[in-house]
Image (tube, rainbow, N blue to C red; front, side, top):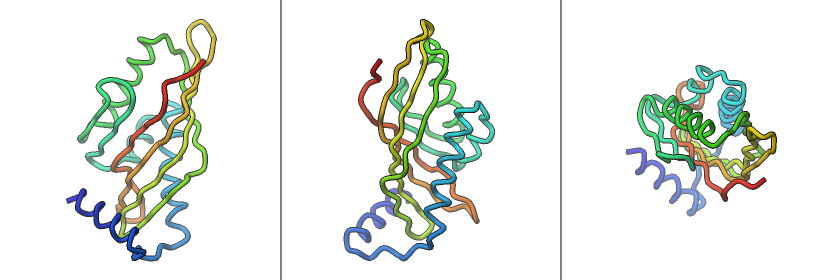
Length: 158
């Protein structure tokens, strides 16, 4: 059903038929994305997890690469923590740039947000990876919740 809604959204945008959105909706979408990212950076996982729907999809560049279902955010963070530890990372931080695209139609949102993942290795040197975070969100009452989060980009560089 979600796929059908997203296809319908894409078709309506291509046809120029997107429903008008209020000026505050993009700000609310950005706020949800920022709140989740900042909470992860601070280690406030309950706040980060609350930004997701009940059964989200998450795709990231660390194994097993894809998480889905009610525990997806928790499993994703656990996997990323294990990956960071296995690769000798001592600190990790995601910095978001302004969204390059936000589309909203009928309680669904699509957003593309550039980001930089920076981390410090045990020996003290720093590395970073620039990429794109692509989100789908859905409105739940007065809030926006993240339904899909996808990270894509090249490998990290020292």
